[in-house]
Image (tube, one colour):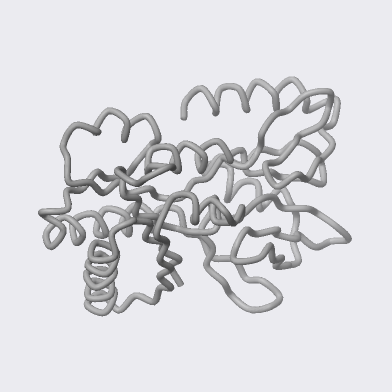
Length: 237
């Protein structure tokens, strides 16, 4: 299920975007939850909102905390949410690039641009999906939502960022999981840990610090390569 948020201080625009999204989701047979927020301040009042949504539609021109500031706060927490900036004005495109917005759409063209925007996002997300045969049954995960994988007693345990942090388990070797996830920005830092670099804040003193607050050991043999890989990854983003 997709998780979508709409943050706009104009009720008419919130409702209009929601109606267009519901129409799109029904047409494409997609399930989603849609949450509405009347300000950037309200959206940021719950910390997990920074990372829990797949897509967030942000009105740029909001009072007190605008859409750009809200997006900057999300990105500062290593959020990989697809941010869509919505406005009635054309002069904010550069700011959109700075916060990694996937689209910049105009309020007077929502009927056309919502569809084009969602088409692009869904296509992008499909490249980030991967299916594993977990003990709980086959499950397809968005790679961005996988925080790390731990090897423990012949099992690989996936810690995932969903509405709450959840775990999935499968029997297998971490070497095999590493091969499947390496192309998605995952880094082996220890014989027992594979981390998603999207959620790593820093690697120093043989410790990898995650944006979730978790800390994992980096083995001495892997430290130099891990740090170099992490620096290169962040530089390429």
